[in-house]
Amino acid sequence: MGNTRAKPIDASLVKELFDYVDGGLVWRVNKGRAKVGMKAHTNSTGYKLFRINQQNYLEHRLIWAWHYGDVPEYLDHINGNYLDNRIENLREATHAENMRNRKTPSHNKSGVKGVYMTKGKWRSQVTINGKVKHLGSFDDLQEAAAAVETARTKYHASFANSGT
Image (tube, rainbow, N blue to C red; front, side):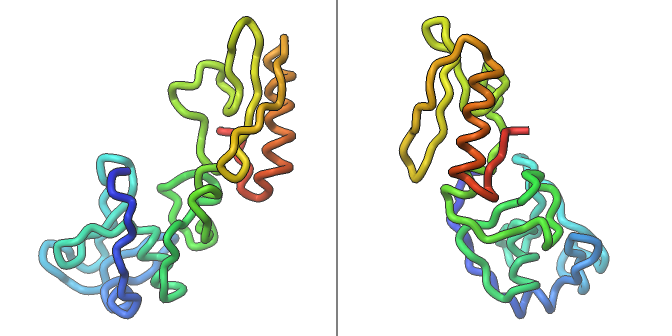
């Protein structure tokens, strides 16, 4: 997503500028080209954002500030849909937890996150605390997928995401 360094957010300014309506923010004042009731626009990476004083802010971070006053370094969309910015779909996370909740990468050839083919076998692996844990080699893709799913559930807990 480019620069991931979080910009400081003044929660009182967020409350002054926006209303939280149906899981998103709308302008509550006219400000420049923004008019009362307008919603966030979507950037080239698919995230919703607002422009405030010549700075872009991701909508989900503004929503968190609107509700809680401060914003942690990382926020996670629980259901993996970064267009769903309802407060109940957001949670504080570490970078590692946020990465665990990712979808299957588009370059994945097996169709199963954490499973790849090498030397005619399906290999399963998960990352735990920054270290790759190899789970084994399997003749059958479903066995490899089951192994990685079991490990993900065990080690990633509420941040486990099978990639769908």
